[in-house]
Image 1 (cartoon, rainbow, N blue to C red):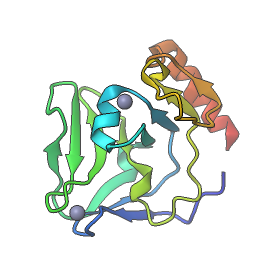
Image 2 (tube, rainbow, N blue to C red; image 1 turned 120 degrees about the horizontal axis):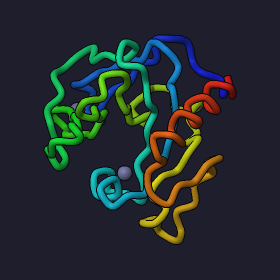
Image 3 (cartoon, helix red, strand yellow; image 1 turned 90 degrees about the horizontal axis):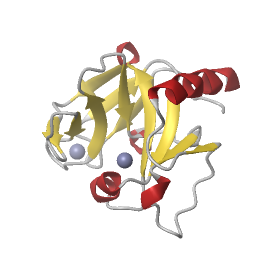
Length: 151
Ligand SMILES: [Zn+2]
Ligand SMILES: [Zn+2]
């Protein structure tokens, strides 16, 4: 993985909302769950998990979208409604950013894939680790270490 210079900058589909990430991601993933299929209007979603202190909205004021449930807050551009990032309730340490927002996406590969139980038969993801649902908290810690070890 060769990362572009930091901060990496990105924007929504219309350009009204801009984001940046100032450090490398902690983990990358593709998720095949039904919620992600609907949110992404595609076969799976892509995620780059950044430390919260490394991520910021540079321009625009993202609005809540998606399920608007208690567990997850999906943030979208108020103008074009592009789903840009997700915060998990009670988890302050990181934010899940849609890596396709970044100007340079060449560095991105999904290290893990989740929810293969809902995977479309044609949707092949070249991930190093596959999970039928989400990894457990114990597995998650090991995945963070394994991803960091890749450099
Ligand atoms: Zn937009
Ligand atoms: Zn999902």
